[in-house]
Image (cartoon, rainbow, N blue to C red; front, top):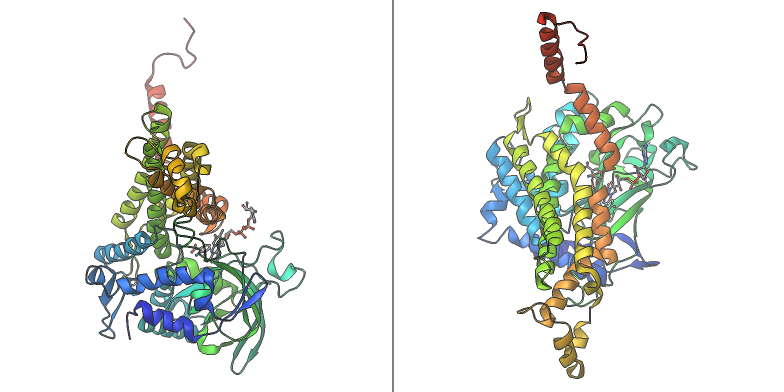
Length: 499
Ligand SMILES: Cc1cc2nc3c(=O)[nH]c(=O)nc-3n(C[C@H](O)[C@H](O)[C@H](O)COP(=O)(O)OP(=O)(O)OC[C@H]3O[C@@H](n4cnc5c(N)ncnc54)[C@H](O)[C@@H]3O)c2cc1C
Ligand SMILES: Nc1c(O)cccc1C(=O)O
């Protein structure tokens, strides 16, 4: 099959019945549920880009194995050009959603591609596991599927291991083995876009200890697998808000869900590892699924930050404040933060590394630096947007107000921006900003940037410890040695008398 169209993606959504709960009720028709309608259309647009002559060669390639055209997320990069092809895909998809949809299909398709092209490390534990992930990779590639993932245990008692929780199946674990597969029970968070995806893959961060065996697992199942319950968070827009009043929240609401597995049977051919703490801890370091997905999320985060900075600059211009030094200094800082991320991406792609199997991976340090900086850079951009927008962010009549001929005169007079910026233009721009810096929708986007790739606090500590393990501190020694050399040859007394 190869690349899907948007309509084929939509037909797939219509064809299944995942157990989705939203606002206390069971969603029986995901496609027609208001909160999902526009996000489904936005994802469908990404699939249609694969058939657009202006984009097809930039974001897809012809698979050597099948001769079919497939998305570049399924490319196992073996050259710098392959990394550029991936980067191109990530940026085209990110720009199509202004970087506001973090878990577009490319993200997890890159994860599974990395797992499959490095499945050799599973052979020593269980050759079936490496065969299964390679077969799964082919399955999602050739059917162009859209995955969600949940790799974090629900936030219960973080001071305790999974087996120490009140109920040993609070966190997802293996209940028993059956001839038809593994029976799993418990929850995982936070599966973004789960209700409108085809499949879910479960895996974990490293960090398992002896005693965690039943929780050390990785597998994938269709999103409508019996016993899998999707518990959605409160929706941040009901799908009925106007594009005028909420130009972003009305289109890019990325639903998050806790996944509750109630004795779900995972067929053996969908099990990628289980009951093995060592294998689970090695999954990340051995398959490169820290770096390759971080390339996608780095490009996406760059686009999102650049978008927020553009909105802030236009806001300042629209009310004539970007001539003031304080505003220019803040805006200059934001533009430089975009340049930092853009430069780190180029360095990561330029200083790529090649693995023993010939896979080309973007350099890890620049990507980890992006992961560490976006959680502060993006909130900073939002803060500057808030301080420049100030009260103007609440000078926000609705589209219906503008449509009311009795009010229109006042609105045109009292809501205009600087010369050349009409009232409607200014209000529309400020509403765009408010979706990012005021609405619950925007606060989620901010929280996403902080936590989408784990806890930035601990990730930065891990980054420092990796640095310390590799650093030679040679400049320190050179400096000390140089001074010591001078001291040795110095005919003056060491204790210099104070003149
Ligand atoms: C909008 C959004 C979308 C997301 N989408 C996904 C997704 O699609 N798939 C997915 O798998 N995950 C997703 N996540 C979850 C994300 O991976 C987690 O939020 C992240 O890993 C941090 O875990 P936590 O939120 O449970 O915070 P916790 O780990 O509970 O941390 C809470 C606080 O306690 C501190 N803390 C906790 N434990 C320790 C410790 N041992 N040592 C020191 N400090 C500690 C942390 O520093 C933090 O300040 C998403 C998160 C958000 C916000
Ligand atoms: N994908 C991730 C996620 O969803 C949460 C935390 C970390 C990651 C990751 O890929 O590093």
